[in-house]
Image 1 (cartoon, rainbow over the protein chains, first blue to last red):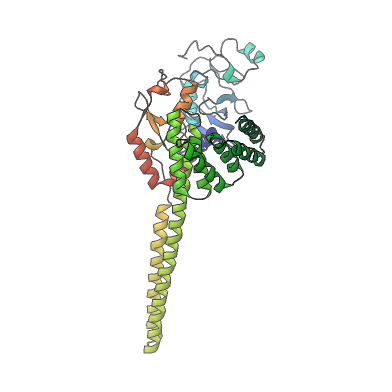
Image 2: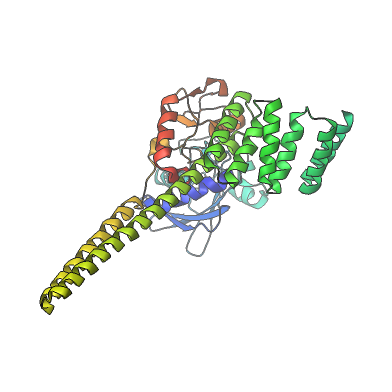
Length: 154
Length: 274
């Protein structure tokens, strides 16, 4: 059994035993490669009110030494949240998820909470600069994109 | 000598290709040419592990340890073979020896060997549990049978003394209650043990989420499993919590925590794979 499988098995049994924090829900975890979770913002931020967002986690065999790939996915009732660090194709620009900002003590739950608070704290109704061009042109996997974390206060 | 090396290399190629029987034969031929190379014994032991020839694995490793007493691989393979043969104490001892040698050598198999230590401890504990449960249930059956014999004897005595049917019924019910109470005592004893168990956070490595075998402490005061943190530091030399620079040479063993984790596992072997 790989490192990742064992660790994810434990994360899953922890989730099943203690349940997740409010606003975070496990949708499916059928294997140890791809999980889906729903998150919503708990306060009254008008940008995200009454919306639920779907996250897709992809794990490599080196997880948690390597970060998982985390993106928002678009469904009929699951839009991509508007945020200056979230591209309209669901790709998230968050240093925590990049090669340099990742730490192996992070886990699925803590990532969801970080994303939740990233939305909660935002009041800008806008996409990242160059969104259209990026969405049209990007063929890279999210973790290989060399984001420029120019503004960590957003 | 060159012949032995050639045979070994051909054996390695066969092993890589998954042809373990042929690899074993080639290592055996190499050993005819050269009986002084410890790697020939450990390589053949590895092929024999794949072939499930446990006793032969043990023979090779013992031979290897005679030439090279601190051979990490020999202890690691010995542990696996003993585990397969349900010789749990030997499996644990050898896994721990391999672990200590691996740490000293800074070898990359630390994660696998740490896993082996936990696996051996878990299986040893499972075995003890199975035996204990079996013994308890044997004891229960024995006690219940004794009570039933007593009951039958008492009823038999009543019949001889010609008591009325009402009294006989009362006595019989009294015995039934006694027997049921005894069953209840056994039942609640086993139920107590299998109630949901929790591993305390202090025993868990925040990277692998396993109980720690060899905890090491960082500058921040936080401890991690040695295999996990070294794996992380190879990729990125920073403290997982503070992101400040951190190097393997700065890690220190946390002996108190190691002892505590060991004692916790002795009492709670299930936690090795919670």
